[in-house]
Length: 148
Image (cartoon, rainbow, N blue to C red; front, side, top):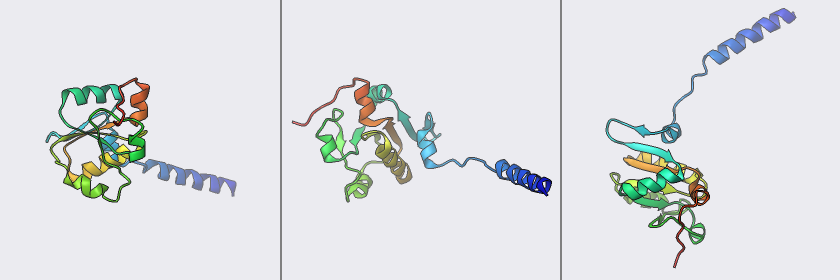
């Protein structure tokens, strides 16, 4: 009887494991090394150094998707606060120009990834997401602005 159970279990494992093809999601697209289509659409997660270089060399809008309280503790120069938890966030996002480049960050990378995914769904063309958020920015000794 043990032999029958062993064979049945082995067959089950073989079938179960052979059909495990990973599915690609929008999040995987955003987190790829660089997701550029032939139409010029870009969604990329970048480290602090690359984020800094891109905002200096490629015109765009820096979006800080943290809360106002977090923003008051320091932000990246020229960043526009757009609280992802605000009731008006989706409406504000919908007002933005889809053809402008956006540089998105939050505290540690979770909310900016969520925002980047929304932006991809809404048809934005270029979005750069700061990997690790402002925490990674600070750890890389990048400049922080304080509110006046």
